[in-house]
Length: 38
Length: 487
Image 1: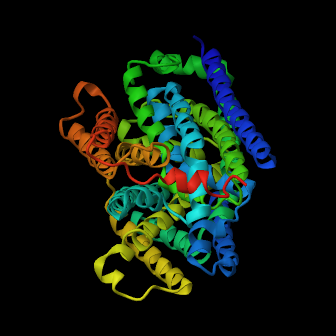
Image 2: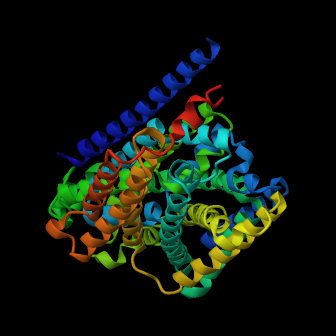
C-alpha cells in the first residue's frame, strides 16, 4: 500500500470515528430532551 | 530570536490570564470544578488539552519517526476509550456531581464502595500523576534548553513557577481559559508545521521515496518489523483503557454546566484530536527523513529539532509554543488532581483530621492552594533527576492507571452486583498484574496491561459474585435515576 493510500485510510477512519461521537451524542441529547418533555 | 520572543510573550499571556481568573475563585468548587459552570467551548478545549500531553506533542512524534506512521493508529484505540467513557462514565459522573456534590473520581468510588476505596484510588492517582508530572517537566525542559540554551534545572523551575502561578490563582477557571489559547496554538502550530514539512520533502510522493530509501518498513500501514501488530495493539489497549476513566479528564466532567454541554464538549475535543493526530503522523514521518539515523534514546528531541532546524522561525516558534502549551496544560491539571487527591480525598478521612472542626469554604480553598504549592515543589524535586524518555514514563503510568481504576469506575457506575471486596481486588489485582509482568521482563513481548487488566476484571468478578457477599449500595440509583440530572 502506498503512503498516500495508507494516510487516506487513516484519515477516513479518524473522521468516521469522530462522526460516531457526534451522532451518538446528538441522539442521546435529543432522547433526553424528549424524556424531559413527557 | 523570533522563537524566544514568541515563547516569552506566550508565557506572559498565560500568567496574565491566570491572574484575571483569580477573582472568580471563592470556594473549593470554584477552584476544582470551575463552579460547575463551564460551557461547551471551554470544556471542549480543556478536555483534549488535558489529555494531549508531552507524550503527544513530543513523544508521539518521536515514536512515529522511529516506528513508522502506523503508530498513529493508537489514536483510534484512545478514542474507543473516550467513547466507552461517553457511554458508561461521563454523563453518570456528571449526574453524581450534580446530586451529591462530587468533584473527583475518588468521590465516586468512595460513595459506592466506601472510604477505603476512596483513599486507595486517591493514592493511586497521587503516585501516578506525580510520576507523570516529572515527564511533563522533562518535556518542557527539553523545549527550554533548546530555545534558550539554559541548563535543565532552571528550565524545570521556570515552567513550574509559571504553571503554579496560573493554576494556583485561578484554579480550573484559569486552566480552562489558558487551555483555549493552548489548543488554538497547538492546532495552528501542528497543522502549519505538517503542511510545511510535507512541502519541504516534496509532498507525499517525495516523503514515500525518502522513507523507502531509509527503511521500507516505515511505509507499512499496520504492523511492521519495528513494531509488530501485537505490540501496537498492546500499547493501544493500554491507552484505550486509560482514557475510559482518566482522572484528569473525569474531574472536568463535573465542571459542565449541563449534561448536553458535556456530551458536545467530548465530540468537540475528539475533533481537535483527529486534526492534531493526523498532523502528527505527517510531522513524525517527515522527522525521520530529516533525522534518518536518530536513536531510540533521543526520540524526544525529534519534534523540537524539526521546529528549530527545519522550519521558518515563525512556524518553528508556533510549534515550540504548541509543545510548551501541551506541557503547561497538562501540568496545571496534574497540580489540581494531585492536590485534590490529597486535600479532598485523603486528608479529611485521616483520623486526626476527622477530630478537627470542619473547614469553612474559604479554609478549604486555602488548604487546596497550599497543597497545590507543595505538589508543584514535589514535582520539581522528582523532575530534577529525569526518570527516562517522556514517552516511556507516560506509557508506564498509563499501564498502571488503566489496570487499576477503569474496571472499578465502570463497575461503580454501571454494575449493581459490584461489591467493596470486588473493587479492592480489582485495583490491587490490576496493580500486581502490571508490576509482576514488568518484573518478569514482559514475557512473550506482550504489554503488561494485558495481565493487569485481566487480573483487575477477574478480581472484580470473582469477589463480587461470591454468594455470601452483599453488593455495595448502588450509586446509579442515587446519582442517575433519582436525580434531576437529566432535567
